[in-house]
Image (cartoon, rainbow, N blue to C red; front, side, top):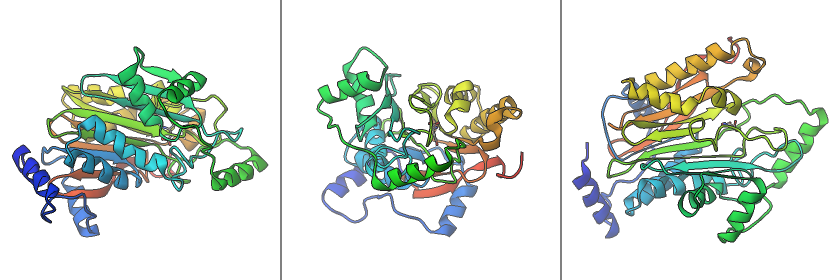
Amino acid sequence: MANRRDFIKKTALGTIGVSTVFSCKEVTKEEQNAVASTTNSTPNKPLIISTWKHGFPANEAAWKTLNEGGTGIDAVEAGVRIPEGDPKERSVGYGGLPDREGKVTLDACIMDHNSNCGSVAFLQGIKHPISVARKVMEDTPHVMLTGEGALQFALSKGFKEENLLTPESEKDWKKWLEKSKYKPVINIENHDTISMLAIDNNGNISGACTTSGAAWKMHGRVGDSPIIGAGLFLDNEVGAAAATGLGEAVIRTAGSAMVVEQMRMGKSPAEACKIIVERIYEKHKNHRDMEYLQVGFIAINKQGEYGGYSLRSGFDFAVCDTEKGNRMEDAQFKMTWDAQ
Ligand code: ASP
């Protein structure tokens, strides 16, 4: 495994264009399988992990930021801005599916290794809520701004207001209005948050989480993603965790904070995610949400171990490290979609 000196050497080589510089390359299916079977085996840093397939290009951007000397917080912000700005990503930022009134409302939060954090919720018209969340963290005495106040703050910081409802999302919304039935189908209709966790070259942990939230939600609904402790939590002494899935269930259980507490008590990241998913299942097995409940967590610890686990099948995450490059891994899960 490369140590800090190797990484710096590679970064320096990269600046003069030598081809041996490490990059976040795509790996083959065989390599992915080998990686999946060795999850958690080797402590390593730097490390970036993020939810779903949109995590793959996001990891590349985050890794590039680290390669160029950026900190962990720079990396997670740069990483999640990729799906935020991509109109083809229907669950994050620009192009995200709207609420039942046809409004794209965005939630995001960011947290650094000193436990500084910033968050925006129910923000409209700003393509990169994660960058507004970072400004809340750095330039205000608060942690969280919402709605109109968050928008006015963003505008005062030079963010541009724009229409985030793409023609495709508008078409889907109009189709949804025909029946107007609210039944979230997370990870089937590609409605999924990006959460990203990173350990930078100094061993410092950062995290970011950003989403357009549950499609067809009530106007004003805020999910877990901008809530520190629910959608994202970290303790630089211990590790970090982030969530995706039905935000209401994650809020009810303080999901990400609980995953970090499990790691504090000695569980591996994968074990910690599993324990909290099991807890969420126990709390919800007779709940009306159970019919469509999906939750997934990713986690990393201070040693650079990582893991993920979901209630139902279909959750995957992107991992990038010096040794093995960027790859997708399937999370283990408790049940398939038809089982309860
Ligand atoms: N957690 C997000 C929310 O409830 C949605 C998702 O991850 O799909 O807003």
